[in-house]
Figure 1 (spheres, rainbow, N blue to C red):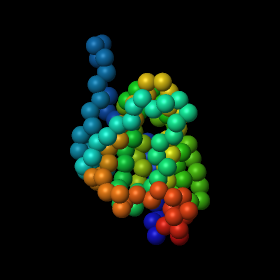
Figure 2: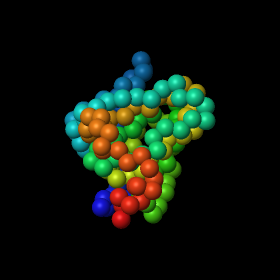
Figure 3: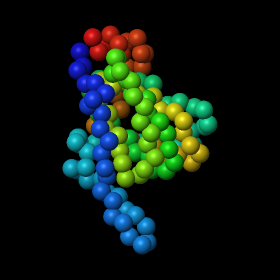
Length: 136
């Protein structure tokens, strides 16, 4: 049983250095509360498409909208919230055991994901029914 709820989800400000030449944000070891072992990004997501639709048993993830915007629908088996990501100096921390779906991608949006683990199919829960059983 995983006790994380949507109350454990956090928006984390990423340090921003403002300059007349443009802004710079830096993600270092203390920006995200876990050591990330995998970095990937979603881009050119067709209009109306959805991504995600799963939960992780052990991995945590940190999502950032580098460009454009998208919605992240988060469920803990009892409650549901939607978070819109649209600022490259803000990230969404998703702890283990939280169902996530990404949708409403704007044209040109890029979603960067920092993950606490390398890809392992056995860490994924891909069926919502299975997820509900995992949360009990």
